[in-house]
Length: 629
Image (cartoon, rainbow, N blue to C red; front, side, top):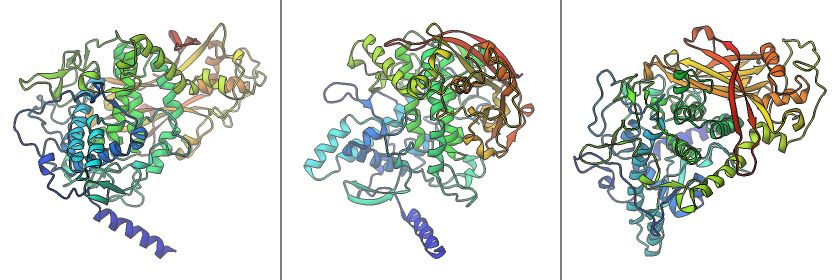
């Protein structure tokens, strides 16, 4: 058996070594090599043949369209094998985001800023900077897809592929929803290193361009971090116990990790869509901490979770390296979709000037940023005009939209009402309201804190089941006068405190002694992922994230530990039983005292139950408890 396994492993390695991109049978360098010296512009892609704005599709929807999906895979294969010295190669466009920290498109570094990428994190520009960036990626893919479609020699095939190419747009992966029955959360098209692909030069076995990006050549000096700088291709969930220099990717581990975070992601998005109406607070993870706000979540902080667990110690986890993983672009287009959805709900909310929280290639930390700040290095016009946030406020200016935000589908009010219905359908099921409406009830007589009689809870053995599968109370125990109380754990930390990511885990009672069991613990309320790197930020600013605790607390109501969700009932329970523990990217627990600027606290707010075509309405947030100051 061992010989069979060894043969299989060696066969796989040989296949990987031999696998290449799709062979088009012609010299495609003219399609991938930049021929002119004028600045590269980011523009608006053409409308569809019927005059509508093409829609960016979810990946599974695009897979169902054979001709579009073939073109996407073929274009990505061509893109990845372009010469890395070309500014329009996959390598250089990916490299705009972070490493290799070199000028792109002639846009030089600001003094003292040449050890960062162009992407603004912890910045009010975070959402809008990615729009021209993703449009540049999409622009290249569109150009290649149309060129490939014209290569088919069969006239009927060529017409079908050219029609598919005419409104080609880059897809997203919706990591916020459960997969269709029988499918994996991380779509299987990302899993296999080798695929069978048809194209204008026949059917071929090729290297799967969604599995990884292979560096050609590998520049260890540019990639900075050990051991990743030794790996000649991007990795997800690298099995470093197998090999430190050539670890195999483990997409199954990534899939499981992301799926385990789905309820938490849905709860956080539901809170962001219903409770956040200020653009700065929604947009980035530095605003709340800079303003002393008690609402500390943001779309950037939620997006960080996908980086942390989508990489699971691979390239996606390390933000300056993350854009080389093909998954990055699917993730960020999904993030852009969520931002576009929030903009539909909050059309008048816009940028308030804010200092940059981290240094980028063209702006040192502390630089005041406004809606007029240039989104470097993306030129709008050959006269040197850059895109800015005001210009990038809508998706339509780049020639794309999303099915949920498409302005051609009705009036602004109709689109908004339709979107609210979808948000309630997609994300409310993981919220306290949805849980009580959709799952079994199992009330126990109150026996614990607040309005209930005291019982002796043994700290060493108290590990209540607070998972989604546990019983829920009857709604009358939680909802009073059409309102209930939401409880949120907030985490704030100095951006420079970390060299890599960490996760702050919240438990009712003590955690398992084995840190590898934390994610599966029945008493785990959830975790807040924090992504920051000293080398990346050199920042004095603070960043923040948040975790809704209410879904776990209603399990405590059902179990009889508290009478309801009122502060009188919940605060004593939290003081007695809520613990937080911090796990570093090396799987070692971190002493909170070693993290500069760490703050962990709990707040609450009364929330009105939504009616038809409504989202929950949040009342004033009140700080209830400091766990670490």
